[in-house]
Image (cartoon, rainbow, N blue to C red; front, side, top):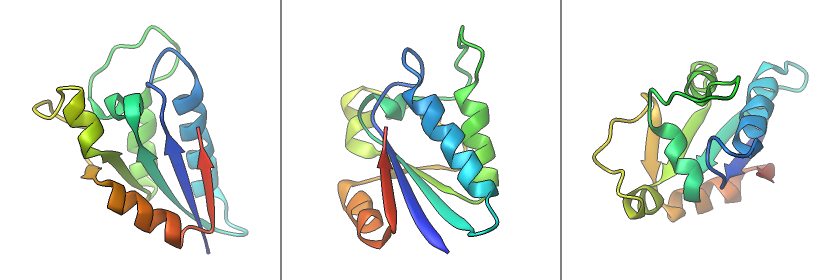
Length: 118
């Protein structure tokens, strides 16, 4: 089984980078031959995606997509210092998303067969 790491830096709404990263993660999780293990790491403004109940004007819902990815068995982690620097540490977060460090990301990079960045 391949381990694929997806790293995202952009905010959830405003560009479609996170949206496309989540679309790719969902599709990779659905592959059976060969199967894949997908891990998602959110950095910079992408950490704002873990805030629940956002009301986007666009036609997609990042929270719903993250919940699908988590239900598919993927781990979703976000940079703790990135969320702290944005003053968001006291907010509720989407269930299943985990605060992490650069050391966590480094470990994922070392064990990943492939890394994709958005």
